[in-house]
Length: 366
Ligand code: FUB
Image (tube, rainbow, N blue to C red; front, side, top):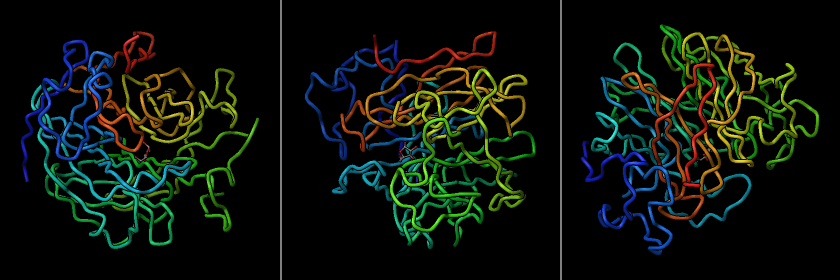
């Protein structure tokens, strides 16, 4: 189903109008007091204004940018450190032919109730294309409340997607993303606290672990890191034992658990420029999108700095994609709602410096 929206993509510095001037009446999005919705406070404007959207994973398919976000909705679930308030029930897909062009909402492409194994919480998804088929990777809690990664497929990048009956064997935790290099597809995942990564040892769930701190390393112990494994030819299975994506500091030591400004929390994403592999991720409770570089997809990676400074709202989650020779960051904040569980996706141009570092982006005007 194609639903062209009235909205256009805005690049921050081009537009500084109050949203009220440009946004149609919201069906689902509540209005905030005018003084809080002054678009001029922000460097970039929401891409979608009739639904709440978050965790945007962007890819170029068929010459267009496709965005696979989470769909935030209002919920009665109380906010807690396990992210119980992110109680999402379906996914939409969006596409745009060029930055600044009109965004198309392809409607609901996968529903929780249609996923046989899933119990609740459709968190941050990603997508990949192989041989003309499209695969949507998504985390959900199973009926026992344990996050796993599922996959659903379609003949079109815009879905709808048909889910598999079971989660991908060998996966756990949250925030899947796929890095493609030639014929190789790598699935990454992981997230601490509500993402449950701290409940595992040697990739096995440790009975009795509960909450965001149980099993979490502390102090000088190495911080937890995302996992990665090559996908099998069917794109629905892992073809190898998952490996840790180790992140080192400038001395070559693993980042420590207490290094909250730099250590991995969730939202792993990989891109490559030249011979350099960039692993970017959210630092969670310190709210940065950080990045580290390596010379192969398995790492190790060395911490280099921040892609994105903290945004409005607790979570920070992003993707990075090249389109027609320019690089773009997709991220979210809470400009439309002022409320952490109700986020809106945004887009910004991203610059790699000649020395391989990335220019840090600010969501808010200084
Ligand atoms: O959207 C739910 C969760 O919040 C995501 O999976 C995390 O990355 C954080 O953005």
